[in-house]
Amino acid sequence: MSDAVSPEGGRPPTPPGNDAVLTEEDGGVLVITINRPEARNALNGAAGRGIAAAVDELDSRKDLSVGILTGAGGTFCSGMDLKAFLAGETPVVEGRGFAGISERPPAKPLIAAIEGYALAGGCELALSCDLIVAARDAQFGLPEPKRGLVAAGGGLLRLPQRIPFHIAMEIALTGDKYPAERMAEVGLVNRLTEPGGALAGAKELALKIAENAPLALAATKQVVHGSGDWTSEEMWQKQQEITLPVFVSKDAQEGPAAFAEKRKPNWTGE
Image 1 (cartoon, rainbow, N blue to C red):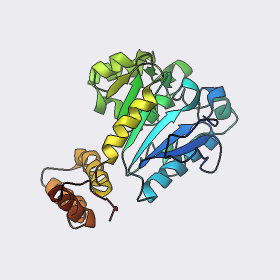
Image 2 (cartoon, one colour):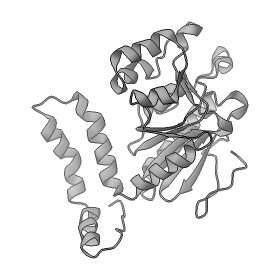
Image 3 (cartoon, rainbow, N blue to C red):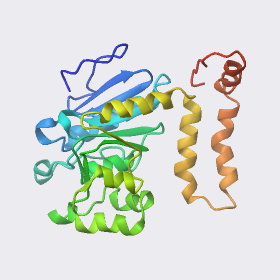
């Protein structure tokens, strides 16, 4: 990935503080690439910090609306680097969890583009994202019990929220690998692509999302993620607290004006 050519109009890949993670911009989309292909993109401390820095960039910039998380060399992520773990190093970022996003995902939408393996922590990374695009031959799994470990990076918390309970339990307890086509059948994967096409498929989806107003996108994500914990008595009030600033924003004026004038809106994120 370090030798990748940026798409026309995009900026070349750059490391956010270290070369274990690269970032590349394309039309309001920030592509975040785990760049440890020699280790099947297993996460060490540098990779965890790099992902955290990249999502901070995504959230802090008004010209970026959507992120894509992917891996170099034909593999998404094979999990935590066990050699680094045995040496006392982990990809956990204080206050943010595994890879800097398991406990505190970005405010803006994040899409996982998956080739090859999304196993253990790699599967948990995918579950930390809002949408998943995967190659048909990609494989998912939580093999931690096979190593005497537990999927404590969000896998056991999020998987039963995304797919039927008994299927989630099978995946969690067997530790086996499951094909992307099966994961699409149970609703975990949004779109399937041919092998090698996951990033292109994710970019297509991301660019479609990025056409929309960034403040509206962030508020929509916040309501969808937060509403599961709201009681029926508080849900309308909490929703209003999140959405009211959107309705009084400059972009809320720009959207109807662009519609009336039959032109594309010029979003400013304000």
